[in-house]
Image (cartoon, rainbow, N blue to C red; front, side):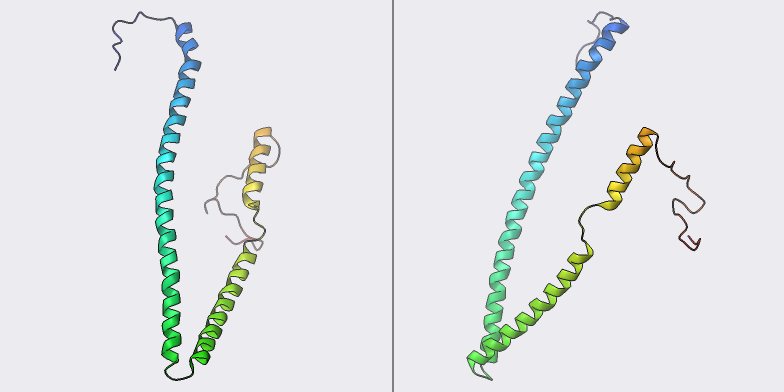
Length: 152
């Protein structure tokens, strides 16, 4: 802490003149703090991601071992080649189902442009310019608006 008793009183203009320098130092300090914090978090997330990828690789190998065990188990009641084909067909069916479900979900998210956010930003820009509609005040129902039938 600095000792303020030794300082001479300064004029208002002198104090106001220091404001840009102080704001600049404050912004630089905040940016340095942000950079240090984000670097620390990036290191933590990088290590976590590496551990998760390692776990995923081990899980994939474990699935291969389990599938081999399933083939070997079926091979006790049928020829080994037929057991391998049965397991492969079951895996392909599961993969097809998961792929179709994923494709349907992906189509729901298309297009990926954030339309609501873009419209909101356009409305904000128009509001700042003084153009467009004024926002409606909240009603007794909150910020909700009635639908086409007039219900909330």
